[in-house]
Image (cartoon, rainbow, N blue to C red; front, side):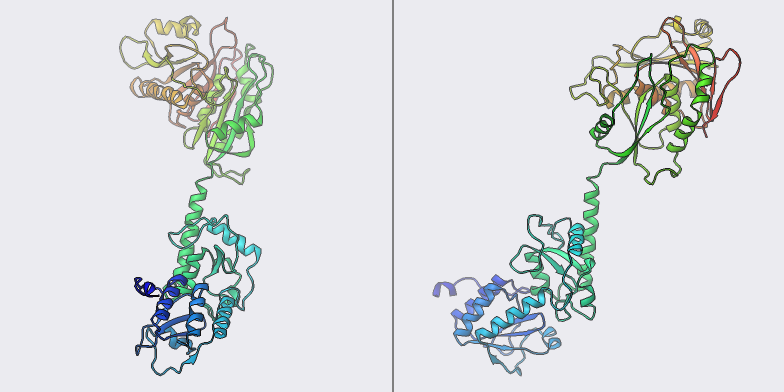
Length: 530
């Protein structure tokens, strides 16, 4: 017994004592045979020494250990009790010498504990429904909502019963006599906004140990802050909503098909969240007859509705056909060069656009997982003796193969030889079909393409730019994105349906429209890009 008396005494905290701390405090009084009294009213429970007048009132949690200590004091005939008016007990910090104390018997302690447990549970209010409990769980993210705690309560049952770890704690008690209880207690007893998910320690703190330190307004602010933070953190798990758009054509009589699973897998690999609907834009499955006269005029006529749909769908205006505005666009391009440039020009760079490249070696749209460090490099060259203004300039992308001057239309080849037409070339030191095999490689190309556009438009002030693409589809599309709406020179795109023939003009893309060229009949088709 003497050994217990020498233990350092737990000093009462401003907020009160926990069950274990209060039990220790009472046990020390029992060891010293110091008379003790407790006062209670509604949810309040305070103890004090009777040897001093007046004595400090100590707020504490009447838990299992405290009940044992009180019953021991009762058996030692040194425990008394008082039930003063609530307002009096709530507003004083020391005992009242005028209180008339009664002997506290073990049955009194048992009855008080039972009544308080009922009060801190459902009380006289409605029980918490499963739907309300689920809503609180959702708002809490499965974590204790007490500020700074965040204890994971996901492995414990939701309950309002004692001796558990996870609790559904009322801000305004479900009983008017409970902590922060008032005339609205019954109405709020099953309101999720009035309930917090809490660990055992913090549930006891706000209801039994430090009620005065946790007023209704403070707990509501705490709940709101926790809920807001949970939403922010969980939203971080959501990939950006992404609209998949394909630009596919059957090339050289070979069908170009791609599965839904393949598209979704490729998008997810870049940590993007694909929307369920896939948009197949300017899809061409007709026979490849580009050699026939007037092909590109017929093409624009046949696909005018498709082109207008692409313009409307990818504009920055709110969509009239979709309830969801995607965070990003995922573009899967495998089409004719003029169409790739045109599509890039329509979609532009105003939105977050992820461009995918089909890899023929692995037959997939994902970047290869192996080390993609390449020995080849992209470079830009200017096939002119002196930099000066050129009325017309050739811009060629030669990443998969080199472009022979003999493949150019005769008048352009002659213009280059006579130094009347400028020529800017972006080339690859090791031309191959899979040279765009990483995001970094695509960005390297993009940097050179921007440099070329700046030189041709700003320095040389060329009014017409002849575009030849011998490069992966992603690079051609990426170039098209750089053409600013309403503010660029005429870009004439070329097509070569047969390797035995020279390139032929296909489409003129201006700041406001696209126009077919190359028709021997002189008939053209044009579409506004506004």
